[in-house]
Length: 196
Image (cartoon, rainbow, N blue to C red; front, side, top):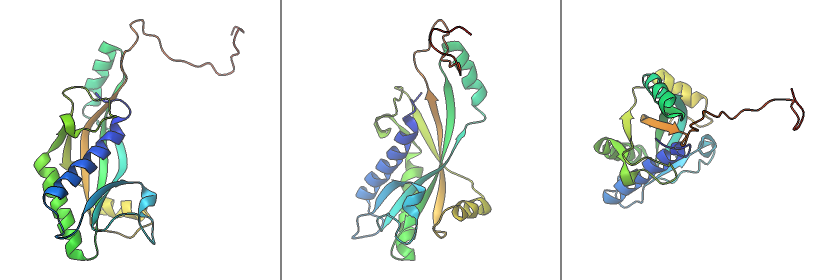
């Protein structure tokens, strides 16, 4: 069960394992391919801030894991902590000087992630406040072409060769719930020392 930093740590973990994989077998011979976690504005024309050849990792959606939310609600009731199971949706986009380079970057990236299957132990970047046996699975997401096109419609850059990946399940939790069940509250309009 990760802390709130788990969301950022997953992105950096994916970036790190891809770069390690590129170092073992370079997608574009004679180049130095890099993956990079980006924001939407990093993709803005006319000059996106992505190294070529390279791969950008855009976290474009965070959603709760519907199938697991009830089970984690039961755990929350039992241990007094909040547990929110999340799915992180990434768009991996290839950048190259020509079509072949982009295809090689996509091919090598998918090979690395499929061989890996998930992130665990030392592959999970620090800052996520991970529990000892925690893991995050990586899946090639089944995203309809229309949804992919709509995602690019909301960005300022033109459509590019991209693949959607899903990181599941990142459980963002609080730790050390109060045994007395204290709840953090705020009363709007109340002044210290003045009763209701």
